[in-house]
Image (cartoon, rainbow, N blue to C red; front, side, top):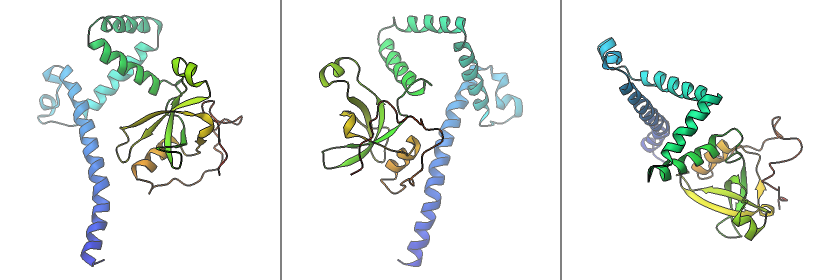
Length: 221
């Protein structure tokens, strides 16, 4: 490899992750700055300082989210939010979009939720190949009646776009529980297997009695 090519590749390895990180952060800051539109014009940075100061929307966004969380955490707030959900549920089209998004967000972000808490190995797309998947739960109703209760639901992210993927229902006995965290598993998938996390010993925070009830560790053959 020539000196020019070596330096060029080394420069790309520095600037590509840095550039993408700055681009994502800029998008997030610009998006949160839109919350300033809720305030009167006299409270905007242009009126206060004479120029646009990016990032002030982060403070307002955090204040809105925290105040909403405080409202949702008490009895009267939950009743009020329930009335809002009921009202949105009566609006055609809106109820389909809002109901689906709310169900997904409740599943993903609820402290009691089990979705995306564990990574496993599953055989996909055919029995001779293994891939990393994320456990989303266990079938309970019609699928459980047809397939039995010894199944788990998993999401198989694609590489490098982990927001897309495949939903599979597989037998518990055909999965292998992984010690790596979900974050480490996603990095492993995004990197196409380059950034493989090191083997870890039993974590202190792990359940000493065993693994998640949705997972049955299989012998590593």
